[in-house]
Length: 299
Ligand code: UTP
Image (cartoon, rainbow, N blue to C red; front, side, top):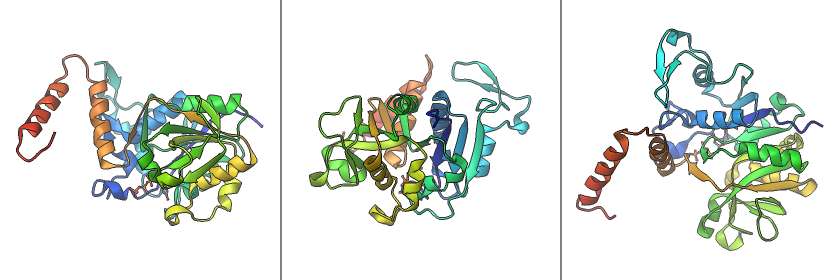
């Protein structure tokens, strides 16, 4: 079987209830972060990792995704000023010509595991990546996972990062059976354990690579935590039959599925991309000064 990873599944059919009312008519992945929609960071990371087929699982944002990434005839002849002040063709497609975009429906939001399973026909029997745009990774780490998948002849690779012990109940947590290196074989996984039951503080974050056998496992995965079909439960099944590795992410992850994480990402990326002389950092400082001096606010 080929170890080449050319397809990535983007499960974006969730309701985004934590981000209401922003997400009533605009899906979470289309919300802007600094100068582009959240999903564009994820797509740029996937394309940089060699992905040529983008499979979006969504019931409502297919037309918006196609419009955003494809060539936009209505902007023909217009110019866009790029981040370095360069002049760009505003109508250009945002992905290279060889990259295909496919949309598949989920029907009902039955959980992340179910959303991935909905992409089974688009994926076929080839290995594939799963990318959750909510987790904005700086720098992107999908290329590292693809390399681990290839070099370790893995059945699966998941990105993990250390989280505070008291937060384990918010994540899938892995047991790597001892000290974690940059790449460690996973012994077991548990979805949202209480801190006292957690096997470690290594949390699964939104980047994965699997061989196609995960689809058969998802097919028979029953609803787990929160009544949803959990991807973590299927990964635990995969780990029981083949080699699944944790790839330790050491960059900065912004959780854009929460309001605070999304605001933080917007500010962090706007600061990181601010050209010399950009007024935004000063504006931010003056906002913070005003906020500090106002009665009733703690630092
Ligand atoms: P989340 O649980 O963070 O997304 O799922 P959500 O359900 O939209 O969030 P809240 O809690 O209501 O605010 C992580 C990823 O999985 C996708 C989401 O779109 C998100 O990208 N997802 C989740 C699906 O595609 N389908 C589902 O049934 C559930």
